[in-house]
Image (cartoon, rainbow, N blue to C red; front, side, top):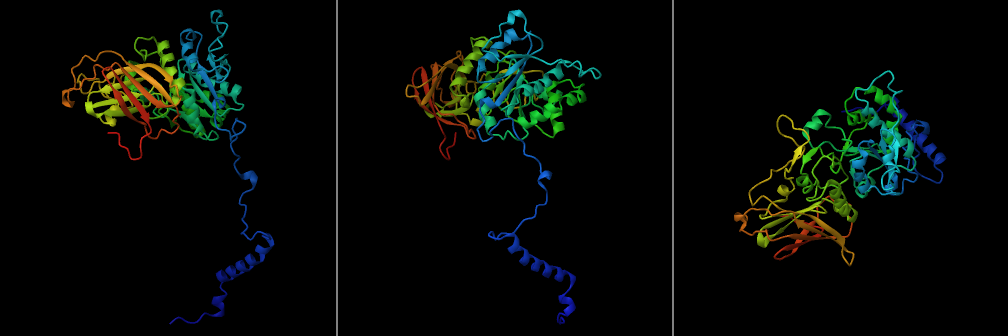
Length: 477
């Protein structure tokens, strides 16, 4: 049996300290908390030791991000300007968008006066003094990266984001505002997306943003990169790519890529319609290389096709290229609508997982020795009448008389020249010449789920489709 506690045990060193602590607590609480009976807290660090909050260039951070908070830097040249200016003019909004196109030299007299419909120009800095001792592998690459500093230097006041691109980049500024408005511009962000072609990412990096598609930097990151620009360009002077230099310098700051599938480098050749008709379910932000692919609309040149797409973009960028799928059960037809661009009718009920794979109408920028060639799944064009779609492209877009709907009309591109799909009942869609789509005149900010649609009418030569939000628990099948 245990013996009774002795006087010595009761006043052991540990228990003595505990007793003194209780006495001290009872004595100090009334002194330091008069009128506020809460435990006082110890300041473990002085204010000087705490990290200072990041302060953005935009004055009032409580104001939602808008177009005036975003500065655009477009890299171009005097040589390319005459046949590329139309791409920038298609999306630039004079007196609303801010930024510059950076030229390699002063415009020649035939390019003046400079058009008011285009971004104002700046001539890039002369970097010869910087590279007096260390010669770059390619002189053009540091110049392109240095454009970030030149834009930040001139546009840092009341600015939250920098967006860099090329003179053949197309930006969808309403969507850019909405996407960036959902991010904290006082944090370090490096947004972009990789190349669509596997070999391009292999050559450069799977972790970099490809600059033609667009590189987006938050204010703190742009400020840090601008401060280190000279040192960065010297450290990586032997790099062969401007985008790789940018990524490497940003990595030295401690920041990695935040990918966004709505930013498109478009390292593809040929007919881009297969990809555009099955765009990823994200807001479309940018396109690049419109000058290197076929016109995206039939019977139009590249500039006409670009302006035609922007008609839909001006009506509702939030839905642009968003794929919506529904079914006409009596005829076993599948409808796939890429809003503002194309519509397809398949003479068979296909699951959404199949229809959202792009048809490989295009070619990679450069082929590797063997597949895979693309960074996404594709399906090959088919001569099977149950798998080959009837193709329709945007003809017009307008708002309804009541103003509550946007109406887009899609016309047949060409005859399909195939028999009907026999396994689905031989219900031919050859007679359909146009598809009219009614969508709500309300911006869709949240697109975590696609819209649903109903076939509200089919007659001898036209079909009508109405978009709506999907019902709770509704299955698209």
